[in-house]
Length: 120
Image (cartoon, rainbow, N blue to C red; front, side, top):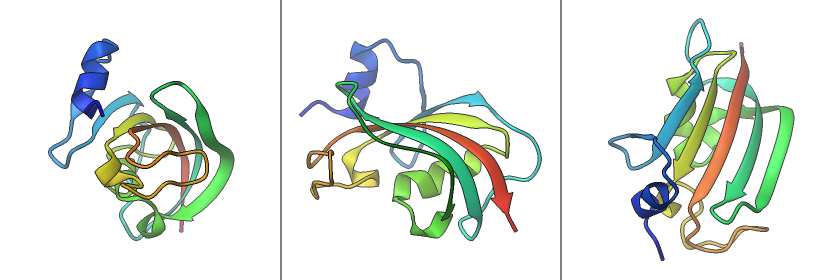
């Protein structure tokens, strides 16, 4: 299995390394307050595997940030409403060794997330 860093290097992807183990690019920072782990957020997102296969997407969907995978919990607070971020998550911050629908076990996941608003 290739590591996340090897994948980024092989594909000439320039992403920022976070000390918590994931990589990201902030496409747009947004404006205003940033969400916290206690926030309910509304997002548009698209999730793909490293081979380009999309496994999930949604628009205008709301989540309690505390109920999401660790990679989302740690990265969505990097942007404000109106912002957009691309995440490159290692399996340890996503679904790990548990296969999910359309996601093989130990997969590196790529998410493009638009934070549309923080709810309440």
